[in-house]
Length: 105
Image (cartoon, rainbow, N blue to C red):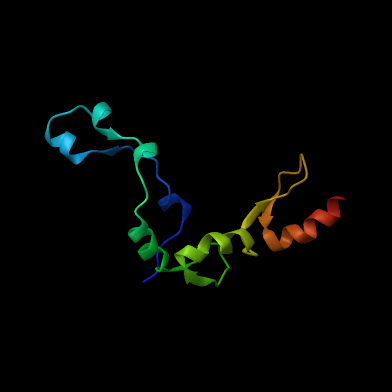
């Protein structure tokens, strides 16, 4: 099984409502659980980290574990990056940026 790491499926910032408050008839504002008051579940984090995933960047063949994905994303040669030169704004795969930057200097 591979998890989809497409950014549109990750990090959705919708409000999380307390189910008990909902059953008791509380309004949505008072039943909302704020993200800063939640705490990570270490067992779930460990379990999720062992899930096999694939890189979502087109052309990348990387496969690995979820807990390795952040490190891969930081070095993926086909990940889209923006040119670091002010005013350029061109977005390209990381391996192309290594060729692009010397052309601007």
